[in-house]
Length: 127
Image (cartoon, rainbow, N blue to C red; front, top):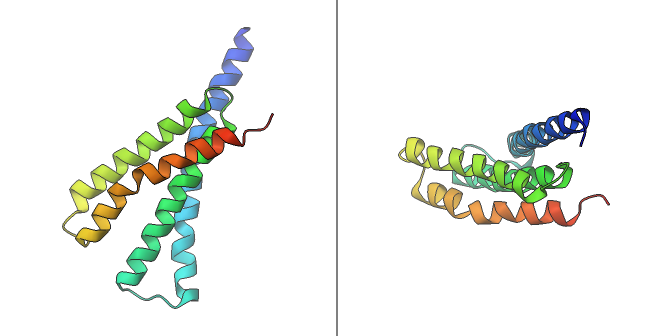
């Protein structure tokens, strides 16, 4: 493998993970944009709405990283999932008293669901 090919693979690997994190933010951000259209105010329902979109964003991010990785899709998706799991654990630890108990538990329990995105992205890679 030539030096240029290795450099290209490294750049594409880093890009697939970084852009996947942007995908997470964009999908999660949709919750904030669409909540007023649906008629959600500051309530428990709005918190559930935001959490659902955050979980969907995790699935989309892991799927993106796995699908667009230059090689080893499960590793790339796993790296994104690990970052999401670490951020979720930190949020549960640091913000646990600021949010209802059901929110924190659902956030942590949803981590295996978000890992399904790795399989989806690896399954539907371009051939």
